[in-house]
Amino acid sequence: AQKVTQAQTEISVVEKEDVTLDCVYETRDTTYYLFWYKQPPSGELVFLIRRNSFDEQNEISGRYSWNFQKSTSSFNFTITASQVVDSAVYFCALSEENFGNEKLTFGTGTRLTIIP
Amino acid sequence: DGGITQSPKYLFRKEGQNVTLSCEQNLNHDAMYWYRQDPGQGLRLIYYSQIVNDFQKGDIAEGYSVSREKKESFPLTVTSAQKNPTAFYLCASSWRVETEAFFGQGTRLTVV
Figure 1 (cartoon, rainbow over the protein chains, first blue to last red):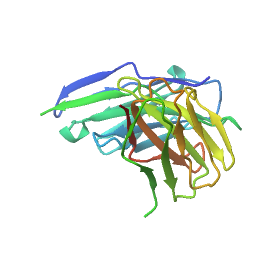
Figure 2 (figure 1 turned 180 degrees about the vertical axis):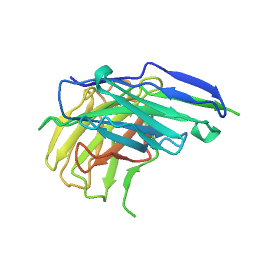
Figure 3 (figure 1 turned 135 degrees about the vertical axis):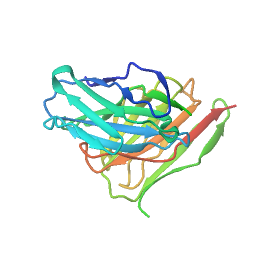
Figure 4 (figure 1 turned 120 degrees about the vertical axis):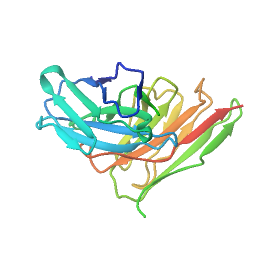
């Protein structure tokens, strides 16, 4: 069974600090996909990044970076030089290529507050 | 514009009534999902559908029902059997399991 764990329920940092959001996943499949989504106060989830299980290359997009490590089943998300607009709930998600049972499972989310 | 539309945004239900939440997408996506969000519990999967006329139960399907008669539509009915239906409901769609999901703006259901 697939499972995603985000142990950090809430994080608060002062603006311009760096912050890392942790994500640990469980899966029996060799082919799977990992995602990060942002949920601002409006409620609609916004897609940030996708990674497949065969691509462990880390990725950087502006102030955002992602560290995928299969050895520890982790897919962590770092925001550098945080800004108030980064305040939101962030979700990590996992889908498996399990024919006939493909579903997208989310973690419980991390509420990030950036203090001005 | 392409997207996924949920309606209504706010919904009030009396105890013992069934209500149906609408979800429509014009993205030509095969997969559609319904999630429930409660404070501190993240997104929990209610039902999902990978193709028209087929759907599977998620982790918390009891008290809910769905249909997938058209590719574009995946309505969710919250039945009177759902004991604690007050929550925020999110619908999503994706082209395939390995592609990103697009979400609607959500429906906030309150039992009065």
